[in-house]
Image 1: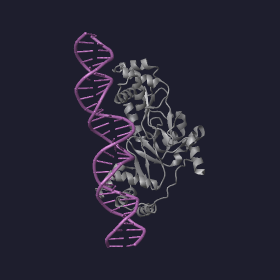
Image 2: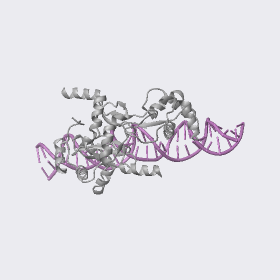
Image 3: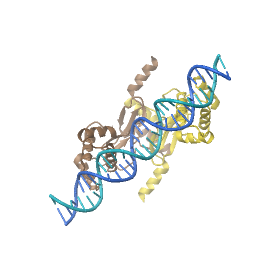
Image 4: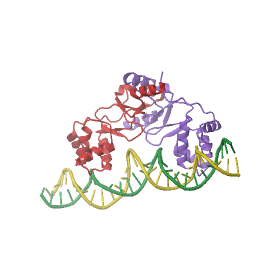
Length: 158
Length: 158
DNA sequence: CACGTTGTTGCGAATGGTTCCCATTACCCC
DNA sequence: GGGGTAATGGGAACCATTCGCAACAACGTG
């Protein structure tokens, strides 16, 4: 067994499917919800609530940031969306379709998605020596990306 | 080589040594600085700025929280103190004498200090497949501790 | 399709953690 | 023991997020 927690999210296929699920759960298919979902299904993942708000507001200017937060929270409860903390700065949200761990560069903020298998070495070590089960999805593992390391090494040589 | 960044902190031996170093660097040995250092050298690590403020204020009630933050920042610049982010909630500060990685439980907030060697498996995997050099000191790797896993497993069984 | 229930929204205020600004204080070098 | 300047207290500002509340709008029902 590798890293494995939380209810496995049922893959949402599209906006309408998700809205149907929202209604099943007693919720309503509001326009702000629909637009937000369209933005989440659009390419480019790991968006902050504020970025999503801007995108949504390009279509529906009155949608308030707090509505974005509330909808993200609701979608997360349904297992459609997840958020990840990538170091300093705001959380980022993405579809819960594919699960992956996060590596984030402390220097430039770049985020790498990594298959959970990458974390198996640490997962095993932590589990065996401490009984601790890591989860690299909700919080990124920080460090320094290749580009920044190269740049920093070059600067150090100077 | 394993996980290894940042200037290796010269081990500070005591409050007075650190204050001497502060002065070398053009700083001044103020009372708030001294008391803060005494608290940092006292046992019990991973204290938040606010906890440290309370401890300092028990001795010198007028020391302001912003002074604590400024002093911690200054001490960090000198390599005497480090801070770590352990998930949600405020950062924690501790002496930079001994370097270790952090594992933090998402359920109960417990923090485990782990030797950097524990992270070697992931460090190698990330370096080799992505050129990414992890640093488990500044940001904790999150997950679930043994106690919480046991409790959660029991609850799931019902 | 009008109606009422109730989930949602917009908005602003509140929160928690941290940083910034600024006039005053107090180190400490001579 | 006076002067230059680092540091302080205090509070305002800041960012990300949450909350409270009155107005609104979905949508099942009649």
